[in-house]
Image (tube, rainbow, N blue to C red):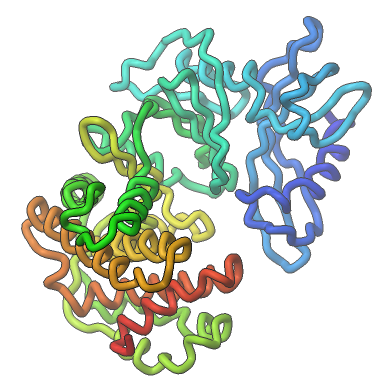
Length: 445
């Protein structure tokens, strides 16, 4: 182990910045310190993999820091399918990221079912899940291919293990929220977790096999509308409004459960400080400057506001449609934010605003692939489904979020400004989508 550590640190310094979940995006690394190497299994005498749960402290050249989980495998002979995961060679062996290693992934699943422990790392089955003491042999794990801020591994369409790549002190908000919502029909069942001293390494849930992602469903609806001449969204073959209505009700039910289980309060709106990042956002996106004073005015609020735990990063990509209902997933919040900020009580209208912005994004995203004269249809689809979502929310919550126009507009505007900064830095040719929303929200459309 002592000989492997410095070589692994050098390999990680070159590899980590290019992983989407590291937030590095190619940033130069100053130092990498492997601070933990917990042996999961030692099968070297039989020729199988050595498995290590590794934690690396990273300091970037620009002064940024992060602590990351990298499950490591070590083999003398590497299967071809694992070649893209190679980190380094060492003493006649190959060292690689083990999230694609079916043997080591299966081991982690088994350890959760057996209430296992490796050094200070605990593999914990949820007491009420029925997963305790189970032997889960024979279920092949495969990593989810979509890029995301963590790494998820699906086992035989029955379970999904999410490994949190960026680690922070404290219980991950995703795990905490799922424990609080364990009786909700709108989340996937929590089955277990991987936990270390003061840190959450992973969370195991039932897998929603055959579920459809809300984002893809919305894109399909918009595409079908555009392909049908002279038809309104209400009569198009793939009208999404009924689903938007059901989704609004599901989100409201989740909000009610979070408030009951994790508490709620009332604060003065001025303490929300929605304009705290406005100056830096304008510096990053000069196109926002003509609207700066109107944005600032819209973000300055007063009066009482109900706050509670919320999802924190809600959009159509964070919901799944099963044959029975809508599921809300990924309660981690914004991964780049400190845990203290992500678990702070906030207005549920922030989640509502995130979903309303997502409807706009779906329509505008599809519009880029079709003639510009369909813009009126795109905007009609957006408004049609925003209205349906709010109506569904109101039926369950007992109040209409659209009726709180000033507050909801402020949250939408805050989100649109954030989107403008993100698109400028990552997809400059998309920045017109949030900029158009900013103009509409400040009355300049």
